[in-house]
Image (cartoon, rainbow, N blue to C red; front, top):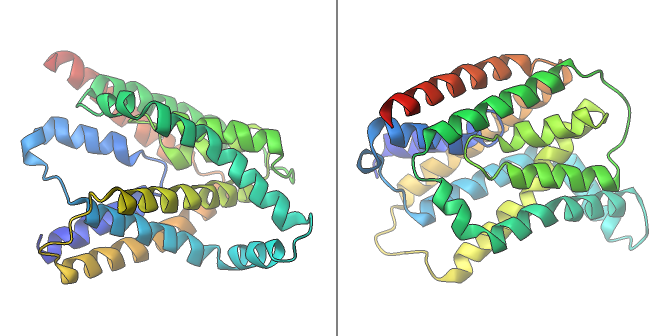
Length: 265
């Protein structure tokens, strides 16, 4: 992998991890347009490195929150940090269960079915539109809200459903504070990413032969820096209720995908 490829892939990973446009959906569209053979399959090691970079960028943006949570947990008391951590755990359960029991079924959906991707992008657009119209409140996320948001995250495993878009929109539509919704959405995915990385490492599928450390390092930096920028930008977008822009984009791309898929079928 050359340096340019590493930079481009890193930036794409950093941006699409946080912006509500569905990275998986766009990947399927790209594969359908270019052909599966035209899209090189990046090594699992490179993918792991990029995901670690975006997880780290989340922790950097929310470093104060992360440190307060850790400090609160080590007090071994039933405090705000302990309650927040429990909500994160609750939100992880649906996606974890879906990933364990329906992994093969999910993989079959990632087969260039751009009509499905189109409809899922339109659903994402609808969620973003409704969330953008919702009034801001000061409401905190409840345990039940955390579970519902977790269900939304598990549904976002479908190609075309944006994870950040689905979880933030669901939280806002439940009447939660928009800033807190964005904060919860980004922090809730960190344990899942780290868990997935751990699973990949323990699986023994990672290949360390002919490792290109320069490409890995540059890809990591590109994903890390773009992730910080995208995460910070997304927080501002949610606060200002500007999700309608992404809603319009997802709707247009979704319609194009459906029309293209229909005429190519």
